[in-house]
Image (cartoon, rainbow, N blue to C red):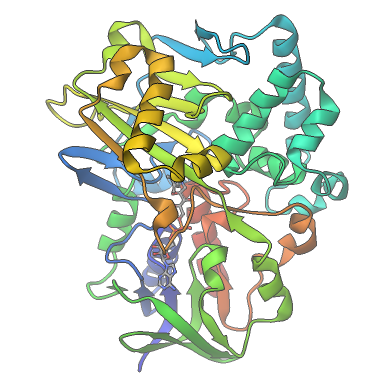
Length: 449
Ligand code: FAD
């Protein structure tokens, strides 16, 4: 058995941030990673000749911790392509183009969307995202689903569907009836307000040259050789008040502290001796991953640009509820155009029940409704496989079921003896985003130091 000051489990951005901060402070650290690579939910891969950001990719202006790290690592960024009109398909099934961030809906629906946006902004402004359970309306909001809350607020179905889209399919990637209104307000507060979530130009602002996985790759590079152990899934942790021993298939590692830098759902996959206190075990049974399929569809050219379109498309009524131009502007000589699209929650369930050819056809049909017949003829098609990946098992992140944020949330970041828990899923600001992973990693490192 090798002894360390701190054993970090998981080489995602959270774990690598912890390891970097502790190493810089002179501590002896090891990082144990189940996969054969670092980065967790960040993966930039060349797939059949197309470079794809399989996991997270966008950086928004509110992600202050991520922006500071990108700066520290001297990485460059570029803006998402957004020149031209966007597309919206409404409840009437009609495709309309529009400029700006407001969907082309009836005046009444637009007024209702604006009113709901203001109300969600007001609720979010009253929330410290690190302590949503202390919101003045926390109990009331956590007892009701976001869908039911929206139904109480407005009788306009298209306004409900649009406001629901920003938090449900687009963020928590669960149906709006399956998470609480409090979780919806947390999602908004964690991004600096609901108005940010509805603004694609804000939330999907920039990309890192070479892909966002360069952040964890650079963090791993800054650690001394041999610090990060790949292909070492942790299966058991034996702990007492003085420290813990972590077991993998290859060996055991002792640390005065152990940081479980894995999503909450995977914390419970490890055996703890003695078992974690009851509230810890109970709490994580009320947290689950959302489900979204990220689609990457590459064409010979970005043909939509010639049609005066930005590539941005939305519809709560389409299989692909949102899509964007995701062409690699940083790849020299790239003439192809890539669209990225998302199929979420119950629509993802039905898509996943089909075979590969049928799935591809359904997606292309949905894209053709946005961009026209040319969308039916890609040169490359790829579905990010996070749901079938045993070291994530879902996307984008995890969230509580109805009533559990107030019941258990305050225990999420509590240490248990020498064990700490961290991941973007339990962040306040930057919740479910890389920014939150960095913030959580830094907070745990500061606590240990
Ligand atoms: P993870 O990245 O999940 O890292 C945890 C690590 O722990 C993994 O490497 C895993 O293999 C390892 N692990 C798990 N169990 C064990 C074990 N028992 N033993 C050893 N190792 C273990 N965020 C953004 O900011 N912008 C975006 O545009 C964006 N888009 C996204 C799109 C997709 C498709 C997905 C999936 C996520 C997206 N995100 C985005 C979210 C972002 O990727 C995550 O919030 C962030 O990367 C999580 O980092 P983490 O270190 O907390 O967790």
